[in-house]
Amino acid sequence: MLQISEKATDMPASAIRKLVPLSDAAEAEGVKVYHLNVGAPDIQSPDCVFDALRARCDQLKNISYTNSAGLMDLRRGMAEKYYKSIGLDVSPDELLITEGGSESFSVAMQIVANPGDEIIVVEPFYTNYKTFAYLYGITLKVVQTNIRDSFAVPSMDAFEKLVTPWTKAVLISNPCNPSGKLFTKTEMLQIGAFCKKHDLFLISDEVYREFCYTSEPHFSALSIPDCEQNVILADSVSKRYNLCGTRIGCMVSRNKHVMAAMLKFAQSRLCPPLLGQYAALGALDTPQSYFDEVRKEYIQRRNCVVAALNQMPGVFSPMPYGAFYTVAQLPVDDAERFAKWLLTTFRADGETVMITPASGFFLTTGVGRNYARIAYVLEVPALERAMAILARALQEYPGRTL
Image 1 (tube, rainbow, N blue to C red):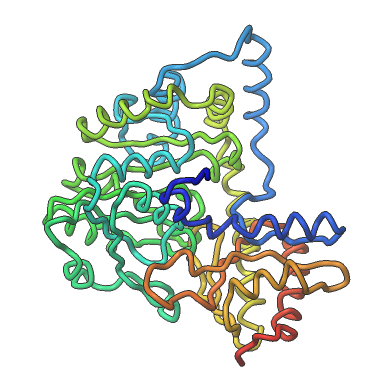
Image 2 (image 1 turned 120 degrees about the vertical axis):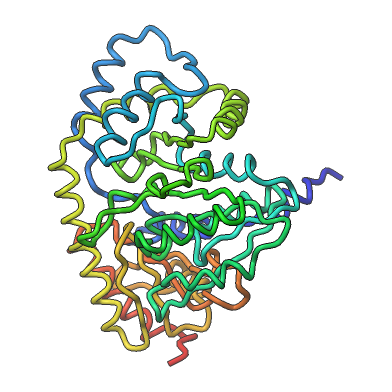
């Protein structure tokens, strides 16, 4: 009898995508589904992206491999046009193009930790950190935060208690997916000092950097003084330019040993997608006005969703200050059961909503069971309708707890 491996059997399903078959089935029946489950915004990509693609594709005779580290034009452009514009001094040799931001932190985890080693994460955290830790035999140790405290980072004592001889790194996303938590400069400096003290790497996933909704600018891990050799930055063009499907990201580190190791991993997958790199090249010419308008739009969307959620009886959602997600505590017995019910049973005039159960963003047993991640990636009128549907669903759900 043919059998797949134990690793394949035990591989955790995506917290974000595992309910997609239910959504597909509902839509096949003619149900309109408001997708609040995945970070795939409806914002138009910059015009300069398509202009660059057309110009370069007109000159192509074939679609070939590129350098494993990515096109030098793109690496140089990201260093000089992008990172310099946000005050980060990065050279092309300190930057390698990856297959999305996921490859950046996935490989970074393998570079810093052996099977059996430990990485500290701040909970909640991006669900794929858990997936990759499982694949590579790495143990995640969690620093807990509290939804009622807006997921504020606790004192460094909470980090200190987790340190063992097997601890190799701290891994964060800033701003955070799923909570929208924006790490302050003070918090980043404290985490950097902690990593320096214990000779730990700091893997900082900063793909949502442009989506910060405070007067204080985003503070990158690359800006932490005296921490240059510790920091590995994971980045992406997916969210910044609304180019999720291009699957282009990058890893940045001033640690030469890290970058040399990364190149070997990159060579094993040959090269990043050529057309995606062309799109990313074009995106570097995006005017500041584009980002200003997108930021303004997301603030409106955030305010719409968070206000609506907190008006629903029994629901609590803290105000997020980054990314385009919020985590909401719902008056339900189980958020995953509720999410399935929304897609399979509940209908409001032929419509329903799709949310992401948030338990997959936690490791602490029992935490997050009645939480959901809401992605405010639709236009305000659609979000208003989706919130009305969600409010009605919560009233009718048989497993309501309040």
